[in-house]
Image (tube, rainbow over all chains, first blue to last red; front, side, top):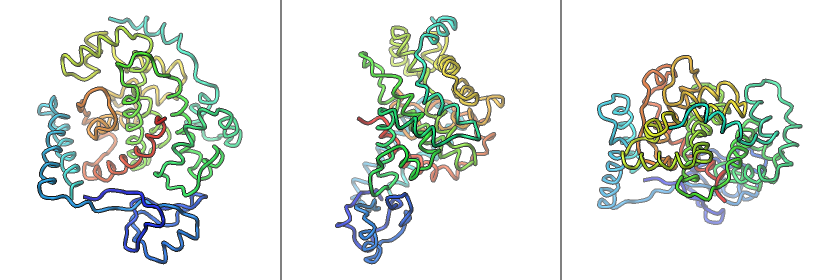
Amino acid sequence: MVTAKRFPLEQLEAGMVLARDVCDASGGRLLAQGAELSDATIASLRRRGVDYAVVAVEEMLTPEQRAAREVEIRERVERLFRKAGNDPMLLKLRVTLQDYRLAGLE
Amino acid sequence: MLTIDQVAKAIQQVPSLSAVVLEVLASFDRENIEIAGLVQKLGQDQGLTARVLRVANSPFYGMSSKVGSIKEAVVVLGFHNVRSLVAAAGIIGQFPETEHPDFDRIGFWQHSIGTAACALVLAKSLGQNQALAFTAGLLHDIGKLALDAYFHEDFQLVLAHRVAEDSTLLEAERTVLGLDHTLVGHELAKRWKFPAAIQLAIRDHHQPESESGPLADLVHVANVLCHALAIGNAGYEMVPHLSSSAWSRLGLDWDTMPALWTETEQQYAGLSLLISE
């Protein structure tokens, strides 16, 4: 499961992937979300006075943790839609939402 | 039970919004705006400025150095974003904390900001006016705040009834009061002279018709999605009715939803700082 985590400049490493754009003081975009950091780009961020970046972090779940998360997601969705009955729009929303939440575990 | 007359009378007593916030709201459907003058006036309101800068300095916008003034915020975020934030901050500031903690104001604003974020993201994907969508999303439930503030005893009965019946708040309001927060919100929107499209969106966000306009459809869908994404505390965890007509009038596509939801959740993370202390 991928989460976004803020790292101070000193802790950035080549190979990390940005979870947010990095901008300079005037709002100009220096690096885009999704970019992979290299030693050269980290050095250039330092020169531009950037002091942190938000990076995508892979959080490893054990099979047990993962199963527990899945149960939580299904229960949460069940509760949200407890009065939805057979309404076709809400059924579609329910399926899409559950897939979206479960995909977040990947 | 409440009558429309009682509501209208109470709403007439509600203090007016500050002149600068009114001016900002009125500018949403105008083409020519004198930006410099407006920015200068905004800068004179310290409360507003503080809230706006808190968001501008959030990690969401990725600024590496501190944004120190409204003028700077306009440079880095763009006038349209700042204008939306100002409207939000001004209206949130209009409803101070009450001594009655039964109605969760923080949760209320979280849900409102989540709906605003979702409306903005939907508007962007559909090529509609984003500032209008954001503000309408933020204000769609304003009638609930007015009910809590000006009909506190009645609203307590509504909240209790909702818990007992495990219903939506809308259903509880209709049963207990004989009217609901969309009507009250619409009265307040008229009193505060919100742009016409926002007035309609507030009035019709639970049952948009084709005459309600695309903004009402947008806010309707954004509200339901925000309940589904469980952003903020609307007082209960339950997804309300989703209109298939509104969905098709907007031309929305289920396949695009996951990407739009991710963007909504990211936007919300930054914007939620509007209400943090």
